[in-house]
Image (cartoon, rainbow over all chains, first blue to last red; front, side, top):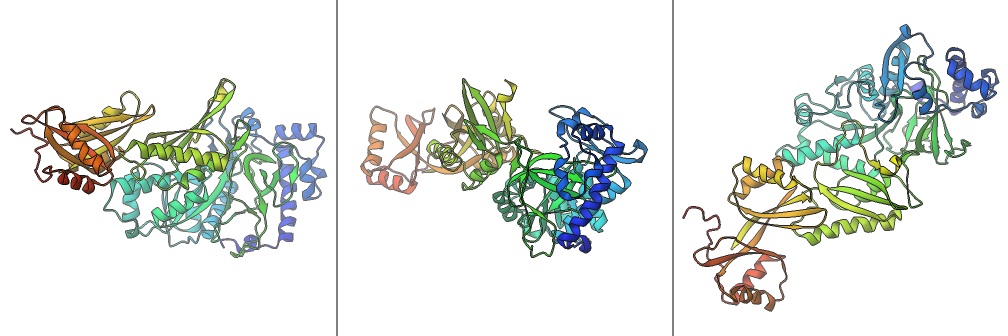
Length: 434
Length: 145
């Protein structure tokens, strides 16, 4: 463990620490950000009323829209001269959301990422190739600072330029790859199709750190098999801090939340009611130590579940289930709820198919219509039409039997679904433009 | 005789066929004969080229999904009934032709047919049983006459 005292702290002691820090954080937001004062006052809540963790439920939520409305610096709680860094979301669906960090916030960010790396068995002797994009996106700099904090050799290659990524695996003796899971598969594809003589076993690569988009267990198996590594999930969101909010450990089941810095609750996304441990719902985050951008009860839209399971790794930190989807990713197709991750799982269960897919939802007349585009690679391609017909029929049959949806399966050429070096665009919902 | 055939997956959209053709053209690979089978979403371009190894390499380097397999080339007389008779050899042995196509050019008064079978050896045996000479080498690229 990177910080044994915190990471293995008894549950009761952790709760005391959280309450003490919450009081500071809620006051900090209330006293320094007019938005919070107004919102709390309107809800009839004053920070003095926060006497126990249970009182948290009285505080109103913060939403992504609130962040957009306060673009760019409206939710900062310190003067701009104390802010040393900003990160921002892409803002494709409105104003970008901007978050800021003081020196101390950057320190916290680095520490939580370093804790994650240690949880994956990474240490200061490792060579970490960071293929997350460097820039306004939190992934690149986040992993970079964490890796340096740990004392590992950090290779800031950023995303893209796959041939070079592979060359550096060899030349720099890379042992750890940080990237999105879809980019990791891109690298595997590239090696298999373009570099038949390249043996991944000849590199020292042993650990993959993947995040920034939900990825399934099936995808983990696929990546581990093809890149010959142990693949771990790192989770985070810029509104909370960036990657490092939570991480898997050697058990690869569930992610430990760094709850000394981030207080987590699960709520019912429809009613906003707080749900007990072991129940699935939307995760809500409250920052406990952040100075520049305190986030009080931020609705992440990520769906998960919290639990304690006496983890064999020795960490006592609460665990969250690997995020299975987002409330806003959930597709309702003719009344059936479907997450893109479920579609991915079905695809990956079919021999040879790869998780390069895109879902297009449209409305034909009064009916929802779903089309799943699947890339045809050499493993599934056949020169016989009937074999390809069977493939698409087989996929459609499984969607029907496993997910209860009737989808049109369209086979498309390899490499034609846009690849992300940041986040994959899995769903195009044309109904929304109606 | 066995002939190497390249097959390519192509979306049924304007311009997509050209991508494969350009990849071959850039490597100076000549297509000897071809056939396309299509659905509303995609098509399969199957072709015989003068240098299948170079052709395959060119396609793969351009990220084009393709496959290689052996098909059966059979030379028959270019006159009424000869294709009928050839197919009789397969029908007798209950062999299903997955697909077939013909060379566009005549070769010394003979036509060349290409057949795709699940089991190419069984098809060759069927022909031999019906008295066809399956050993004869056919000059498929036939450009240097």
